[in-house]
Length: 166
Image 1 (spheres, one colour):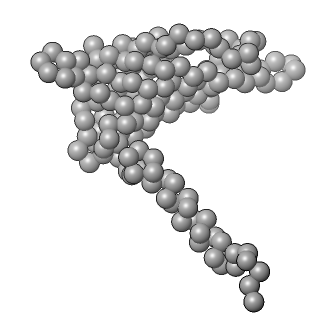
Image 2: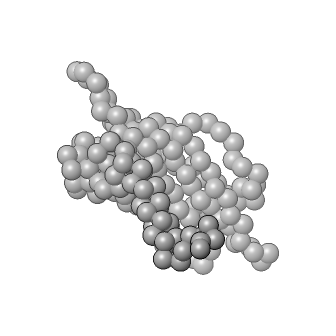
């Protein structure tokens, strides 16, 4: 007689299958990088959409990046430099990309407040026609912190961006 509950060996298999299916749904059905990659590498001017910082950032120094964004690519592996921060990630067959970087561990003065990590996720849009200029469209997210005697305060800022190849 069954109680209607999953049996112990069945539930982990169902959970593992569901997680595998949800992971493969990212980036056009594949979590692998591109095989025939778009020429995303280059120097881009960066423009963040205007916005206000969340209230949690009130006492934390928030400096938004100004660019330029320098992108290099080796097959599907991409890296970028943005205002002194190195970001690394993947370019996918769909021209979607994701980059992440951290300044944690680079602090030599014992607690400089500011940017801890950042990410860029979006899509490479090739230039169209003669003279068309490639662009990157997506979201930038920065995670900031400030440490004081009363503890560490953290906040996250997200902005949409457009980056145009120079």
